[in-house]
Structures are given as C-alpha cells and as structure tokens.
Image (cartoon, rainbow, N blue to C red; front, side, top):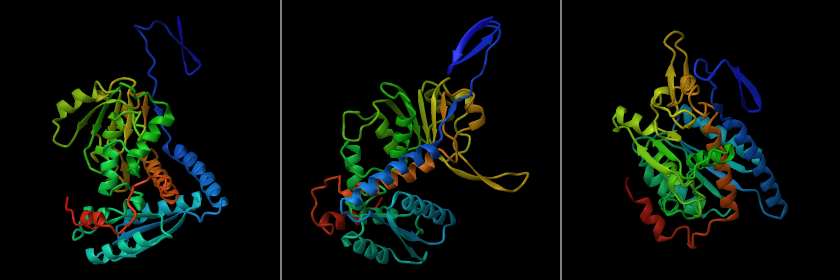
Amino acid sequence: MHARYWNGVKLFTKNFHSSSIRLNATVIDGKSIANTILNELRLETQEWVLKGNRPPHLVAVLVGQNPASKIYVSNKMKAAKVVGIETNTMKFSASTSENELLACIKCLNHDENVDGILVQLPLPDHITERTLCNAVAPHKDVDGFNIVNIGRFCLDMQCLGPCTPLGVHELIRRTGISTLGKNAVVCGRSKNVGMPIAMLLHADNAGETSAMDATTTICHRYTPPDQLALFTKTADIIVSAAGVPNLIRADMVKPGAAIIDVGITRVEDPKTSKSYLVGDVDFDKVKEVAGYITPVPGGVGPMTVAMLMRNTIAAAKKTVIYNILDPGAVIYKQASQLKP
C-alpha cells in the first residue's frame, strides 16, 4: 500500500503501476472571481466619489432587437449598479442609418458627463462595425475596440484594453496559473478576442499591460485538425475562442494543462428540443485530464463584464494619458472612415 497527498488529503493505492486515481481539474469559478472584482471596484468608486468627484457614467448604444444583445447590455447595467456606476442605454431601431449612429457617438464623445461608451455588437448588416468602433473617442472606448487602443495594446502600452482578453488575463492571474515561459495555444484569431489574448499571453510582463511571458501559438479555423492537436498536446495553457463546440477534446490536452474556454454557442438538445449554451471544450471529458478548466457559462463571461466596469472607472479617472486634447480631432474623423 502506498500513500500520497493531494490538496492535503492522503490517498492510497495498492501500487502506482496497477492502480491509479484520476483527479478532476480544478473548475475555475469565473462568476465568484468577477464578484470579488466588482466589490473591489465598488469600494474604489465610493472612494472616488467621497473625494468630491461625480460617479462614473457609462452609456450603451444598442441597435436592433437582438435578444442576446439585450441580455448582455442588461447584465452590464446590473454590474454597473453594483459598482456604483451611473448608466444610460440608448436604443435605436435596426433600420437606423450609420450616419445617425455616428452623430450620436460624436455627441457622446463631447459630453463631459459621459466617461465610457460601448457599442453593443453585433450590428445590423448595413452598419460597418469597424466604422462605429473607431468613432468612439479612445479615452471613452471602454470596450477597447478603437484603433488607437488596439495599437497601444499591441505595443504593450497603457490603454483601455479589450474586456474579454483582460478578463482571461485576470482569471489566469487570480487563479495562480503559471505563465512565465510556458507553452500556450490560442484557438481563434478574431481582432477583438483571439488576437489580443495571444498578445497578452506572449508579451513582456515588464511592459505596461503586465502581460504573461508565454510562448504562444495562434491557431484558427483553417488549421487542420491533426495539426491543431499537435499544438494543443504540448500546451501548458489552451485558450479557445473559436465558437466551435467540442473543438478541444480530451485526447488533445496535455495532462495538467490549464483550459480557458472563451467560446460560447447555443445548441439544441435533440431529445428535449431545449437550447443551452456550450463552449469550445468537451468539458466533462477534458476536466478528467486538465489541471484547471473554466465552465461555460460561468467562466470567462462574468470576467468580461467585470473588466468593462474596471475600464469605465479608469476612463472616469483618466488614468490613461492619450495626449489628445480635442475628442473631435482629425484622428477620430479619419479613424471613423476606415473600413475593415
């Protein structure tokens, strides 16, 4: 009989060769961590107001009747209330023209009582997403989608960064997952999620974004499945943001690896016809191999909202210095005309 310890608990096996005990991964409770952050931000906001400042003010621009978008905006506004951020949601019909929305954003850019502006995505097909995101003044761009913030982010400079990548970063940091010199794989290359997550994983921790110093590989929808498996099998950290259910299987995961599932897809149960949310990871089987794993829902999603609140407070405090005095300066006019 042999004894060994795991999390302070003594485990026994007859011998290590003929018998083994499978230990499930630690499930990272993103909702709990996000609530901790929201409470920290609530105290920060209270301290800010007690010094004689007005509460931070966040405005959401919601276009159309997308049910998921309505839920997302509602959740963000609820979190803002917890933190002490004042909010306003500007609702537009799906037929609203791009020029009308640009005019609205211009007014918000110049409104001194508005600290943060978020344009809820996706937008109707006749509106160019990049045009609207670039129209938001960088110092009010709490989603981190303006090209000024994207450029600063990629150069490892202080900025209002994209919320989901910041949430992944904070989730990894607060869970105590080691990243220095580790192999990381990011599945997904979107400009708002996959690419900035990869940037945060590989960049120098000594920089202003306090990145993670990992050796990072980016895979995407055209990476052949057998090649994807070759990369993931050697990864200490896998972040999947492809929106493909069961993309990451147990046989693709290195034992003990940390799995961060950013993907979210609504699927239908063929037996009950009820829909439910799943991530990119085969959760039940992968958790038997991995060391850490995030659930869907309840993993990265709440962290994204928490980072939006943190960005809004940073915008109110003007902690990021852009050296641009006029929010209507030509840089915004030019940026708003850029196409993807």
